[in-house]
Amino acid sequence: MATKTGPKCPICGKPAVPEHRPFCSARCRQVDLGRWLSGDYVIPGAPVPEEDDKEN
Ligand SMILES: [Zn+2]
Image (cartoon, rainbow, N blue to C red; front, side, top):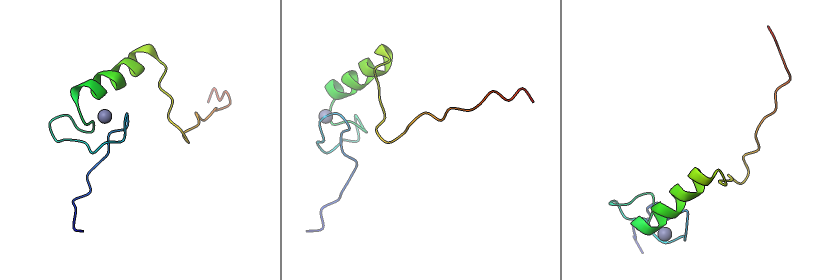
């Protein structure tokens, strides 16, 4: 009942381990890293705000 609720792996949803947090394993960490490097990482619910050109 009093289970410690730590962060979950953003890749597969498994409980993250301190050694690889916030991921559950080195594998998931690599997957996440690959997404970043490929520029294909999309954060849901975080639209990029577009600002008008304000020169001053
Ligand atoms: Zn994982």
